[in-house]
Amino acid sequence: MMTDVSGGSDGRSVVKSNTHIPYSPLRSRREVLAGLSSLVLATTLGCGRGDRTTTPPLTTTSKLPALFDHRITRWGQDPWSRGSYSYLGPGASSATRRMLARPIDNRLFFAGEATDTEHPATVHGALASGQRAAIEIQEASKPGLIVVIGAGVAGLGAARDLTAAGREVVVLESRQRIGGRVWSDTVGGAPVDLGGSWLHGLRDNPLTDLAASLDIDLIRTDYEDAVLFDADGRLVDWSNLDHLYDLVEDMLSSSRSTKSMATAVDELRRQVEDEDRRHLEYVLASEIDHWFAAGPEDLAFSGVHEGGWSRGGDAVPATSYRPIIEHLATGLDVRLGHPVSEVIRTESGIRITTEETEFHGGAVVITVPLGVLQAGTIRFDPALPTVKSTAIQTLGMGTMDKVVLHFEEPFWDPDVDLIAYASSEPGRFIEWYNAIPWTGHPILVGFNAGRPAVEVESWSDERILTASLDVLGRLRW
Image (cartoon, rainbow, N blue to C red; front, side, top):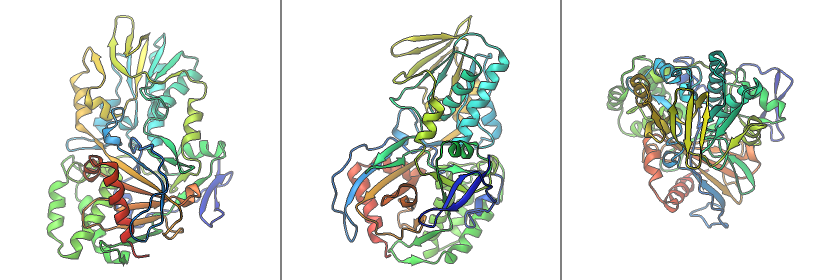
């Protein structure tokens, strides 16, 4: 399948079907990370339990127009995700992911983005992991029903391939919807992804061809098409931060060990002073927290260097991910509202217990998020081997949340992709993406990641909205 990049109605780059995507790196600032390894990072594979309240037009502060609708996510508090996506914490490496993925007794198989070593923390990494588990089951030649736990992308991918191979498959999903950490909702009449949003690495991503087959336009994101505002709201020239990007790049490339980068970051902070300190905190949060959903205090150097770099740039589906998820689920036996409490290995196979019933089969594919495994939500009998449980606890589960604001009219430059803010409160509401190109509506999507996101999740909706609007009201366009 070949693809094409052409101009949208507003002059933006739109990926359509049937021509070639030329490789052109989009992130000259974000080559800080790309240049270190072949890593591809997920901007929000998962981003939270949304506030589904549709608000009447709300009079906002300062010069802002009225707020028509909004959503707030809290993925860290969602009991069926317990975070957004995985990362390598101190002591973890790609071998830790491989251990998590390893089957047990040819009956328990594991999938999900946390098990994928090439593209962890991405939607297409989740899909690949499900497809890998399906192959493992086929090679194990286990007869009987195959139970898939979780109707996210990994679970749907596994179930789809197994069903196509003629196996009897049932998918058990805790929520009352499919998609898992990929969740599309309607905000003020516009489809918006509250979880995974981007297709990363269009040239190598199988979802690119799938989107084309479904006639879904992919709207390119140019991370260089960005403006930066200082804490007082004035515009800042990006070149003023070049030396700080260089410092961060040198620090990240200084080690590939599984040690924490906390000490190195502390040393980096001691090298700067005055205004540079605030700008450094922006660079650290943008280049680390907002890529890994975890800060340097929680991340190993090895986490920066893992995975395979996918080329071709990133894009957002104009329809949201919804039609892609629905396509993956077509023809599958998916049971919603079926949270699994026990996975039991029996002499003849496996027994899966839910709140309402039991399922007996030959094998199970466990695709629940890493955070759910860490929380012990599912009981395993016999208990998981020590090496498996150690892998589960050594990997990290990051938090990235969104604040989606639908205004009555735009007050920002509609041709800018990214609005950055060097906050005086490090990490809070520092990045906002212009969703007009994806949705055709005056929508901004704000992000919090890592420890700041965990802190903000504890706030009330009113406080989150007030803080968001306060930041946006300071910006001097």
